[in-house]
Image 1 (cartoon, rainbow, N blue to C red):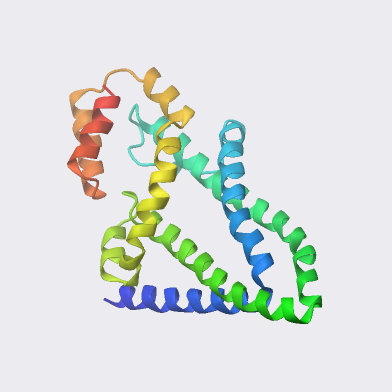
Image 2 (image 1 turned 45 degrees about the vertical axis):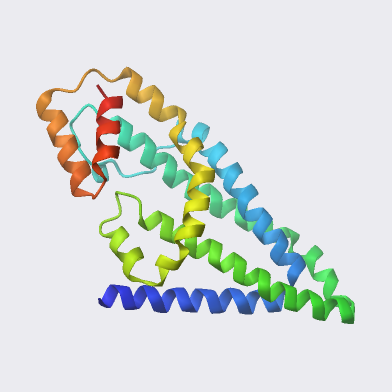
Length: 219
C-alpha cells in the first residue's frame, strides 16, 4: 500500500510539473518536444541495434537463466534496451538545442499569451504520454509486481493510452533482429531447461499464452 501511495504522489507531481512547464515554455516548444519524443524514440531504437553489437553495457551477472542456452537471447535483448535508454537520453539533450528558436514566439505580446495557454494544454498531453510509457513499462513481465502497481494506482487510468502505444511498438519489438538471430541458432531445449525457463516466466507473472509462445519459438 505504501508503494501505491508513493506512485500516486509521483504521478500527480509529474503532471503538475508538465502543466507548469507547458505554460512557461509555450506551445511551440512543447510541440517540438512532443514530436521530438517520437522522432528521438525512433532514432534511438534504430541506432540501438548496431550499437548493441559493439557495446556490451548490461551487467552479465544480472541476466536470468544463466548457464542455459537461452542466456544469450536475454542478454542481447536487455543490452539493447539499456542502450536504447541511453541513446534516447542523448538525443533528447541534442533536441534542447532547438529551444532558443521556439522562444521567438514570446517576443510578440498577443501571440505570447496564446502560446502559453496552448502550451499548458500540450504540457498536460506530454505528461500523460510520459506517465503512460512508465505504466506500460511496469506491465512488462520482468518488473516484479509491476501489473499490481498499475492496477491499484492512478496509473490504471493510463490503460487506453498504454494500449495505443503498445499497438504502435508491438510489431517492431517482435521483429528485433537480434532475437530472431539468436533463437534460430539455438539448439532444441532439453526437458529440464524447458521446465526451468517455463517456471521463471511464470514467476515473473507472464501469462500462460505468452509462455507457450516463447517456448514454442525456442524448440
